[in-house]
Image (cartoon, rainbow, N blue to C red):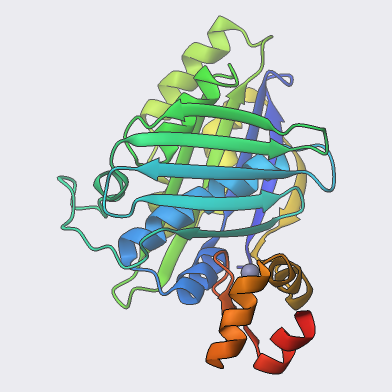
Length: 288
Ligand SMILES: [Zn+2]
């Protein structure tokens, strides 16, 4: 199954919903950054959420970024998604390992620790939208649920999951976001809360071969659900030699000159995808 996400509504438009399967996307990120299992789970959950949040944006060129900074050994995560299903991202310390948590799961919460979550939405306006909340658990889904409630004032339920296989490859990844619109009735809220209490985890649903459509139907089937749209997703960075070159041209001349004097070619690594760009001494002289 290739990776995709979908958008749906239910209860006469008073609930909006997103679901995603992102196994290949997360696996590509794992290989690009050589991530440990905990780092794979942390980045995979954040990327899956960012893709769905990008899907909420209106403009083609709009982007959403999730920045997490915490006191734990992973230190932080940066992810950016666009409105067209592309995501890129990295964790600050990709080789973190910790013992399993009390449920026997990858301990993402302790790897991230206490800290802050910042969401930046660039919608082509003069200033981007910036929302910031403290981390609740460091497990990402709970942190985003809290963010939506407090910063965007949209009651939401966020489920995210990444299952890492014994060979460290990504076995399952994906999630959902449900959001209540202002016109939602108390009756719908009560029924939905009851439903969500009883559901399996996201990775269990994927292990049962459920698709994003099945997950939406499982969550919202009793509320007259309507699937509106579907979109492919992928891990894709928009860095290029030209962009990196612009950054190099912006370096101060003394720094460039000292590299040339030392005969040291310049190596620049893109943080988001780990691609390496090399600039020879001749190229550096040309730039001077
Ligand atoms: Zn890149």
